[in-house]
Length: 503
Image 1 (spheres, one colour):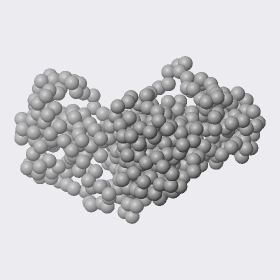
Image 2 (cartoon, helix red, strand yellow):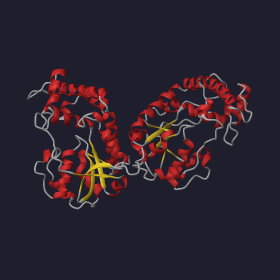
Image 3 (cartoon, one colour):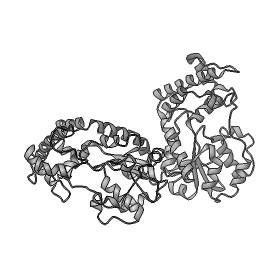
Image 4 (cartoon, rainbow, N blue to C red):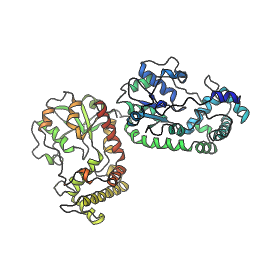
């Protein structure tokens, strides 16, 4: 029996990092299959995307590897640069229970007959049918104890991909910078990741039926106790950490995928005469946008463009998601570094009537801020660090809804716009991108853009590049990491596809 197991589980021929990835004829997408992490389903999704129909042997697609496309050995750089290279991770406890019921105890056509027989003899695994939850728990304890030995190379049986650690699989492509999705969030994470380059990804996911799932006679809660849970998490501790990291990162986006309820509305700046709506975020061209809508509606400039916020000149509406979808509806985001420096010069350092002198005074008193003319670049750098420290303190002591909108994270103000399906535009390419998504539907828009007064930008004695240091950049990243991720997501989509991403 041991000889047969050695032959069955012998290592496949060596592959380069790139060749471990699957890709598509139809799109520059790269996927690293990890066994017992939805790989049967995902391989079938990949097949469908290239062939527009399901694989004839969907459940056995692993045995038809030539029907799928592997990346070329020289594609490492392309994969590293790609925003569409990913692996799917699974809760290691769920993965272990799936392995046990699907491959070891289960008696279906895809189980491991020889492994079952070996374990029955080696560790007294009980293979009687219709076991109760306690007997299954005892089996799982014996099995996880054996896996601990096997994964430490202390058994006669080779490590099998079905129980090999996910972290081990990822280590084999450790230079490719893959995005980590989670199996329990795949239904929304995969369309979010690939929607820009695979517009029919949702359709493919709904059509494909092949998945290697075995019905379990008991739930996870009925099988697990503290001892078994501790053993599984100890054996797969690195997998647990990776899965938790991926889950935490996904929580930001999960909030944006809460279904919009019937009758729920979103407040937008709009034009009474045109089908155009926007959610305007502070320090992302908000003054310009409100003036643009005013010009579009009234065919003239607002008499005092910089005071348009305080005098309530813009039209606004409460719109449903279906109304938003029928019109040109958008929001604008900005590079967090540029947004921070705009805050510093426009509201804190400069002294115009739109500045925040009470903030500058507090910074001078408590954080060594220098509020004088003709500062050196080093003094501006020190000021920026003082302001970042102040903002960090606000983040620690105030609830997100209570933060001043000028330094609140953009993602907090954008999340409802994302839920309602407004299209994301970049401030640095706002005019061009707005005309693109309008696609001729808003009469007079191009003329209004040309006629609208300049944006609310303050003069700067030094450029951002001159003031920015690695320390300042890191501090901004620490505070606005989620904003940076959103900005890069939107920028990548516009740069590569010429259209906004599906968020």
